[in-house]
Length: 237
Image (tube, rainbow, N blue to C red; front, side, top):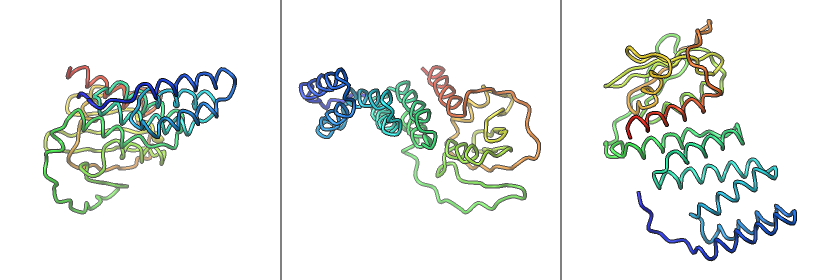
Protein backbone atom coordinates (compact mmCIF):
# COMPACT_ATOMS: atom_id res chain seq x y z
CA UNK A 1 0.00 0.00 0.00
CA UNK A 2 1.62 3.25 -1.08
CA UNK A 3 1.46 6.36 1.03
CA UNK A 4 1.68 9.53 -1.02
CA UNK A 5 1.57 11.86 1.96
CA UNK A 6 4.80 13.83 2.19
CA UNK A 7 6.50 14.61 5.47
CA UNK A 8 8.32 17.93 5.81
CA UNK A 9 11.65 16.11 5.92
CA UNK A 10 13.59 19.28 6.69
CA UNK A 11 11.76 19.78 9.96
CA UNK A 12 12.03 16.08 10.84
CA UNK A 13 15.75 15.93 10.07
CA UNK A 14 16.42 19.10 12.06
CA UNK A 15 14.61 17.66 15.08
CA UNK A 16 16.55 14.39 14.79
CA UNK A 17 19.87 16.27 14.65
CA UNK A 18 18.91 18.46 17.62
CA UNK A 19 17.96 15.36 19.59
CA UNK A 20 21.33 13.75 18.84
CA UNK A 21 23.10 16.81 20.24
CA UNK A 22 21.03 16.71 23.44
CA UNK A 23 21.80 13.01 23.86
CA UNK A 24 25.51 13.59 23.21
CA UNK A 25 25.58 16.08 26.06
CA UNK A 26 23.65 13.80 28.41
CA UNK A 27 20.19 15.33 28.24
CA UNK A 28 17.85 12.56 27.08
CA UNK A 29 14.79 14.32 28.52
CA UNK A 30 15.48 17.43 26.40
CA UNK A 31 15.97 15.17 23.37
CA UNK A 32 12.59 13.56 23.98
CA UNK A 33 10.97 16.97 24.43
CA UNK A 34 12.48 18.20 21.13
CA UNK A 35 11.30 15.10 19.30
CA UNK A 36 7.84 15.37 20.85
CA UNK A 37 7.49 18.97 19.62
CA UNK A 38 8.38 17.88 16.08
CA UNK A 39 6.02 14.91 16.33
CA UNK A 40 3.10 17.23 17.11
CA UNK A 41 3.57 18.73 13.63
CA UNK A 42 4.44 15.39 11.97
CA UNK A 43 2.38 12.77 13.85
CA UNK A 44 2.81 10.17 11.09
CA UNK A 45 6.59 10.42 10.90
CA UNK A 46 8.12 6.99 11.37
CA UNK A 47 11.71 8.31 11.81
CA UNK A 48 10.58 10.55 14.68
CA UNK A 49 8.59 7.78 16.35
CA UNK A 50 11.45 5.31 15.95
CA UNK A 51 13.98 7.69 17.51
CA UNK A 52 11.63 8.50 20.38
CA UNK A 53 11.17 4.76 20.96
CA UNK A 54 14.94 4.22 21.03
CA UNK A 55 15.67 7.14 23.35
CA UNK A 56 12.82 6.33 25.74
CA UNK A 57 13.77 2.64 25.91
CA UNK A 58 17.48 3.30 26.50
CA UNK A 59 16.89 6.00 29.13
CA UNK A 60 14.52 4.14 31.43
CA UNK A 61 11.17 5.30 30.07
CA UNK A 62 9.75 1.85 29.14
CA UNK A 63 6.09 2.85 29.24
CA UNK A 64 6.64 5.75 26.84
CA UNK A 65 8.72 3.51 24.56
CA UNK A 66 5.92 0.94 24.57
CA UNK A 67 3.37 3.58 23.54
CA UNK A 68 5.56 4.56 20.59
CA UNK A 69 5.88 0.89 19.64
CA UNK A 70 2.09 0.59 19.43
CA UNK A 71 1.83 3.76 17.35
CA UNK A 72 4.59 2.51 15.05
CA UNK A 73 2.84 -0.83 14.63
CA UNK A 74 -0.24 1.00 13.34
CA UNK A 75 1.83 3.07 10.92
CA UNK A 76 3.63 -0.02 9.62
CA UNK A 77 0.33 -1.88 9.15
CA UNK A 78 -0.92 1.00 6.98
CA UNK A 79 2.17 0.53 4.81
CA UNK A 80 1.71 -3.28 4.65
CA UNK A 81 5.04 -3.71 6.45
CA UNK A 82 3.80 -6.54 8.65
CA UNK A 83 7.24 -7.75 9.77
CA UNK A 84 8.02 -4.34 11.26
CA UNK A 85 4.55 -4.20 12.83
CA UNK A 86 5.10 -7.65 14.39
CA UNK A 87 8.46 -6.54 15.81
CA UNK A 88 7.05 -3.38 17.37
CA UNK A 89 4.11 -5.23 18.93
CA UNK A 90 6.45 -7.79 20.47
CA UNK A 91 8.72 -5.03 21.77
CA UNK A 92 5.74 -3.16 23.27
CA UNK A 93 4.77 -6.27 25.23
CA UNK A 94 8.35 -6.82 26.39
CA UNK A 95 8.65 -3.20 27.53
CA UNK A 96 5.33 -3.20 29.40
CA UNK A 97 3.81 -6.60 30.20
CA UNK A 98 0.48 -4.94 31.10
CA UNK A 99 -0.10 -3.96 27.48
CA UNK A 100 -2.56 -6.00 25.45
CA UNK A 101 -1.45 -6.29 21.83
CA UNK A 102 -4.51 -8.28 20.76
CA UNK A 103 -5.97 -5.29 18.89
CA UNK A 104 -2.74 -4.82 16.96
CA UNK A 105 -2.52 -8.51 16.10
CA UNK A 106 -6.09 -8.48 14.83
CA UNK A 107 -5.37 -5.32 12.81
CA UNK A 108 -2.47 -7.10 11.10
CA UNK A 109 -4.65 -10.07 10.26
CA UNK A 110 -7.44 -7.88 8.90
CA UNK A 111 -4.99 -5.84 6.83
CA UNK A 112 -3.72 -9.07 5.31
CA UNK A 113 -7.32 -10.14 4.65
CA UNK A 114 -9.25 -7.01 3.56
CA UNK A 115 -12.17 -9.21 2.52
CA UNK A 116 -13.02 -9.49 6.21
CA UNK A 117 -14.19 -5.87 6.15
CA UNK A 118 -16.57 -6.56 3.30
CA UNK A 119 -18.63 -9.08 5.24
CA UNK A 120 -21.92 -7.70 6.57
CA UNK A 121 -22.29 -7.60 10.29
CA UNK A 122 -23.99 -10.71 11.58
CA UNK A 123 -26.55 -10.75 14.30
CA UNK A 124 -24.81 -11.79 17.49
CA UNK A 125 -26.68 -14.15 19.74
CA UNK A 126 -25.93 -14.60 23.40
CA UNK A 127 -23.94 -17.78 23.81
CA UNK A 128 -25.09 -20.17 26.49
CA UNK A 129 -22.25 -21.71 28.43
CA UNK A 130 -22.05 -25.48 28.27
CA UNK A 131 -21.45 -27.36 31.53
CA UNK A 132 -17.84 -26.92 32.61
CA UNK A 133 -17.17 -24.02 30.25
CA UNK A 134 -15.58 -21.00 31.96
CA UNK A 135 -16.24 -18.45 29.23
CA UNK A 136 -17.27 -18.32 25.59
CA UNK A 137 -17.70 -15.79 22.83
CA UNK A 138 -18.24 -14.88 19.19
CA UNK A 139 -14.98 -14.68 17.21
CA UNK A 140 -16.35 -11.89 15.04
CA UNK A 141 -16.55 -9.76 18.20
CA UNK A 142 -13.74 -11.13 20.38
CA UNK A 143 -10.65 -12.22 18.45
CA UNK A 144 -8.72 -15.39 19.19
CA UNK A 145 -5.91 -13.11 20.41
CA UNK A 146 -8.19 -11.49 23.01
CA UNK A 147 -9.28 -14.93 24.18
CA UNK A 148 -5.67 -16.10 24.51
CA UNK A 149 -4.79 -12.92 26.41
CA UNK A 150 -7.64 -13.48 28.88
CA UNK A 151 -6.54 -17.07 29.54
CA UNK A 152 -2.92 -15.99 29.96
CA UNK A 153 -3.88 -13.24 32.42
CA UNK A 154 -5.88 -15.69 34.52
CA UNK A 155 -3.05 -18.27 34.39
CA UNK A 156 -5.64 -20.92 33.64
CA UNK A 157 -5.08 -24.56 32.63
CA UNK A 158 -7.57 -25.88 30.10
CA UNK A 159 -8.71 -26.13 26.49
CA UNK A 160 -9.73 -23.29 24.18
CA UNK A 161 -12.09 -24.67 21.52
CA UNK A 162 -12.61 -22.69 18.30
CA UNK A 163 -15.19 -23.58 15.67
CA UNK A 164 -16.12 -21.95 12.39
CA UNK A 165 -17.94 -23.04 9.24
CA UNK A 166 -14.61 -23.98 7.64
CA UNK A 167 -12.53 -25.44 10.45
CA UNK A 168 -12.15 -26.17 14.13
CA UNK A 169 -9.24 -26.25 16.51
CA UNK A 170 -8.13 -26.67 20.10
CA UNK A 171 -5.43 -24.77 21.97
CA UNK A 172 -4.09 -26.30 25.18
CA UNK A 173 -2.91 -24.18 28.11
CA UNK A 174 -0.91 -24.91 31.25
CA UNK A 175 -1.08 -22.01 33.72
CA UNK A 176 -1.96 -19.59 30.90
CA UNK A 177 0.90 -20.69 28.66
CA UNK A 178 0.13 -22.35 25.30
CA UNK A 179 1.59 -25.87 25.31
CA UNK A 180 -0.24 -27.56 22.43
CA UNK A 181 -2.72 -27.22 19.58
CA UNK A 182 -4.80 -29.48 17.35
CA UNK A 183 -6.68 -28.72 14.12
CA UNK A 184 -7.99 -31.59 12.03
CA UNK A 185 -5.05 -33.90 11.39
CA UNK A 186 -2.54 -31.21 12.29
CA UNK A 187 -0.93 -30.81 15.70
CA UNK A 188 1.41 -28.49 17.60
CA UNK A 189 2.85 -25.55 15.60
CA UNK A 190 1.21 -26.51 12.28
CA UNK A 191 -2.18 -26.64 13.94
CA UNK A 192 -1.64 -23.34 15.73
CA UNK A 193 -0.77 -21.61 12.45
CA UNK A 194 -4.19 -22.59 11.13
CA UNK A 195 -5.95 -21.59 14.33
CA UNK A 196 -4.60 -18.00 14.33
CA UNK A 197 -6.26 -17.56 10.93
CA UNK A 198 -9.76 -18.32 12.26
CA UNK A 199 -11.73 -15.07 12.13
CA UNK A 200 -15.36 -16.15 12.51
CA UNK A 201 -17.35 -18.66 14.49
CA UNK A 202 -17.30 -19.18 18.22
CA UNK A 203 -14.98 -20.18 21.02
CA UNK A 204 -15.27 -21.58 24.50
CA UNK A 205 -12.75 -22.34 27.23
CA UNK A 206 -12.99 -25.25 29.62
CA UNK A 207 -10.69 -25.49 32.62
CA UNK A 208 -8.81 -28.68 33.38
CA UNK A 209 -7.56 -30.03 36.69
CA UNK A 210 -4.71 -31.83 34.90
CA UNK A 211 -1.83 -30.27 32.98
CA UNK A 212 -1.31 -31.20 29.33
CA UNK A 213 1.78 -32.74 27.68
CA UNK A 214 3.93 -30.01 26.10
CA UNK A 215 4.07 -30.19 22.29
CA UNK A 216 4.62 -26.45 21.77
CA UNK A 217 7.48 -24.69 23.51
CA UNK A 218 7.72 -20.91 23.15
CA UNK A 219 9.27 -18.08 25.13
CA UNK A 220 5.79 -16.59 25.49
CA UNK A 221 2.34 -16.72 23.93
CA UNK A 222 3.10 -13.42 22.22
CA UNK A 223 6.27 -14.81 20.62
CA UNK A 224 4.37 -17.88 19.46
CA UNK A 225 1.55 -15.82 17.91
CA UNK A 226 3.90 -13.44 16.11
CA UNK A 227 6.11 -16.27 14.82
CA UNK A 228 3.02 -18.11 13.58
CA UNK A 229 1.69 -15.03 11.78
CA UNK A 230 5.08 -14.49 10.14
CA UNK A 231 5.11 -18.09 8.92
CA UNK A 232 1.60 -17.70 7.52
CA UNK A 233 2.75 -14.58 5.68
CA UNK A 234 5.73 -16.47 4.23
CA UNK A 235 3.55 -19.39 3.13
CA UNK A 236 1.12 -17.03 1.39
CA UNK A 237 3.83 -14.89 -0.23
